[in-house]
Length: 470
Image (cartoon, rainbow, N blue to C red):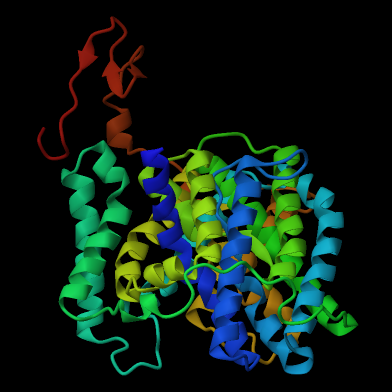
């Protein structure tokens, strides 16, 4: 129980900044009062907790039963802001409910495409997830609010660097338990340092109610508008792609098989959570990629730990005072920890890509093109701003861009092989194995390699020396 609480709290602290960001952005864009924005935040915590418990513990036909933290999806922020300008929050809630119902109906299509997600595709997606999250870590490290005068100040970045150093120090010097809790302990120590030097403020913790039940349809009953539903449906499709990638990624990390049935159960849990979330005043739910990184970096693969984190989120949704405590953790501290977390996701993807066969095929160019395509929205956020809204909605996310490109290119080159050249592409010609002639002439008939050592025909080991030492 003690370990579940500690590791579960670590998951909550890791994703807290992300889960409250969406309701803050949408609420402010919709012109809500600060108290109503607070209700949006509380509703998102409550709905995310219920969705996490459903995804990890599961019901028949719902839930992947994998250590996945659920929360408000970032994919729909731009679309929801646009909808709020016409119909307000009720129009957003109606679009989310209707589009998620359609998404629930089409999940069988997504659940049957696991054979199109080999290590080539999953490795690309996992790597891209880590890379696309790095700007989030940098933004946090700089202060998390670019409207404040100290955004990007040396003090903020030094606090992030200190937190990063604490994570590394605890990982190196601590026991196994301390190492696994290195992220949580670094967040606590980093927050303590910030408080001591006056970089965080707990004075607002006492302001507001201690306990509050989530209000049902507090912002009014949902309204259903065709244009809003269609635009939100595109977001739902993107969410399904991203959640599929996250489910496959965490399955790879915890070394368990994700078949079409398990993927389908996970996607149905996503859609059911997204249908119910608007009842409490929240939005579309999806898996949080940063918590996939936490599973990888800590090695704690228990779904019950994540379910405990979901319980924490439900409690935070019922206890606004606890939410205010967690909100007092400085963004710079989160940024220092985020560098390790998100970098670990990318490293896990690279490890997966190391399993891919690059011999005499187009796999290398598939990796290069897909990751490059996924980096476009990160390198140039305004790249798609002059395209139709539906194009920007699909491709503004580096994760969905890379996932779609990887799937299409894998189908084009590895499944639909008609028209493929007999010879390999010039792009992968340099990956062929080579051996120097002067090394070949030193071998004799009967020589063989076994477990990285060279033996002659009589089984006597032939010593190998470093280059230049002979």
